[in-house]
Amino acid sequence: MSEIITDDDAFDLRFSTTADETNVKQWLYEPDVRLWYPPSSEADVDVFVRNWIGFSRYKASLTAIYKDEVIGVATIFLMPYIKVAHLCMMYMVVDPKYQRKGVGTALLRNIKHLAKTRFRIESMHCEVWEGSPIIGLFDKLDFKTVVQQENFVKFPEGHRARIIMETQL
Image 1 (cartoon, one colour):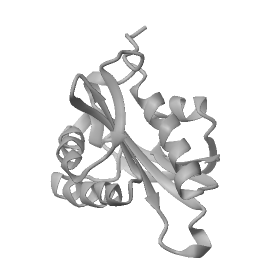
Image 2 (cartoon, rainbow, N blue to C red):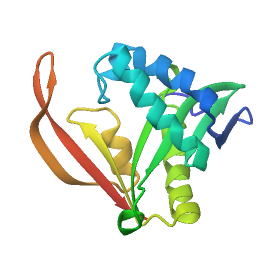
Image 3 (cartoon, rainbow, N blue to C red):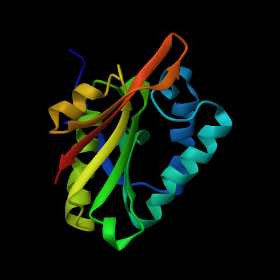
């Protein structure tokens, strides 16, 4: 079992800032990480991350810090229309060096709490690709598969399903 770092005094969560964009881009530039997210190229990553970190201006994004280093970001993608403002989508990424150390669990629990208490979100969903290692974490924290679209995304070895997972807050 990997060392859990979230109980360490050197671990903390804070609201994200636009400066965190650099770290998210750096992680998503890594092909093994980008594989599990929508962008296909570094140019696509730049646009994706700019939109992602833009929600920090509403305090809808949390950043994990360990020993003064940014190690993860989770963001609520707020809906702009009143009719659907009770729903949100969420994306999360953790620095590969700190995966399986409790960081994703801490970010996901806290982003769910933030969505419910600050934004009065009732339902949060996320989009993952079949085989993604994060599916187990979402299962553990009460996300359920609500849609599975077969052959949605093209991987080098073939097509995989897109899975929409949702949790009620």
